[in-house]
Length: 553
Image (tube, rainbow, N blue to C red; front, side, top):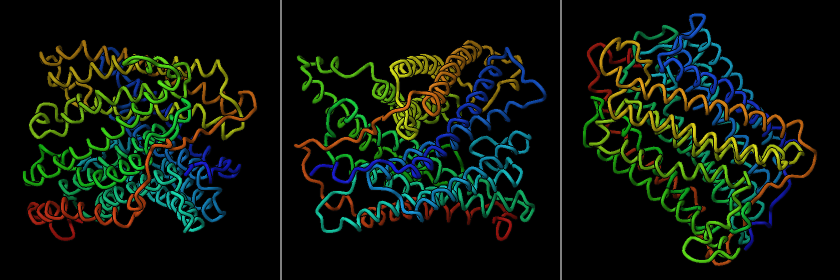
């Protein structure tokens, strides 16, 4: 059955809501990118921040604005448009939830950003205790999370309405809307951890209501959220790969079942794995660390399923276009189309990025690279290249579609050029980070505290390379922002396509269980309880003297 049966034009009111999120996302890209450029300049040893600005101040700006704000706002803008396009126009109530969520998130972002800029919250994007920020910073992050719950609820309700309206029709639910719901459910479950930490520990602590917090517990609650956050960033990129790219290249979705299964596997394996970020920390029994390492490696399965699905779809289309021999199909793909080329670079970056992730999660190899700048290099491959370049590739058609303009040939070519610049800059910067990490360069440091130590001199060439790569990346950011401004306000008016693929006729039928959210959520909750109950009980019961009772919370 065709997926096209219930496709609709995105309503102008829904488009306005989606674009509001996208505008904030690209403002965050500008400010966060500038902060990142200042960071690599400082680490090169050739630059001092002016006006008393602190290194950790710009580090926090960079991490929060790009890791949390750019991603969350763009993802929600894309998801709102995707649900409206494939499940139908939002009701007034559903759209109202979207606007309430947007303003809560925006007000929270502004509050947190002001505190960071005033140097009252230089606590990095992980905001670990015992680093303490101003209470307004924590309140701002709380509003961002609560706002995302409200806005996400509107998207889920629209999907539920589609299923109710089409009950008994025998149709599969729209694949893109289904994926949005999976990503939102994962986000809701994951953010419970950071919400508990902020509301019951960090916020009361910063207000002076309690004397201290349990650091081990706060870090564990953060990483309960923190690793699922990675998949919250990645799954929208997977939505583009699975559903949008097939239509862009003129092919079809390889398998609806495989796509839905991979997303359900990400849902159940994304949350109960956060302790693999804490392999070197005391207070958590090694058995539970090992169990979560095993669960982490289970996530490789849906990643490999995705890679297989993508390249199978590429080969099928390439051979339809006349590709001969083992790799002749590869030449037939539309390499000049930025809607394909830019996300494809992101796909390629996920190969070394995923390999690095296996090292990060490995019980033994993690000991070498833990808390070194290797980890930063890994994040910049997986998130800042794989996910972000896919977002940019989607923005090149999504923004003109929502604003009633067109992606011109010159802007398309400029988008390809920016992606090449991004790939070059990231290759230089991330490679330098990985190598410096292997020789012991620490993460989250400007290295000034090492003074004249020999090891600091060993890092200098790689720090300079990071500055070179970061400069190229910032040039790419400026070009991308220019394209976004043109597509939003100045490109020729017209009709741009919102490409949504259809399933290949040989894609098979989709088992009903893949759309039974109750079953998968029960599995998810069971895995979370299994992976976290005893470790958290151990942390609380073995907390140091004087930290029990009211002082813990």
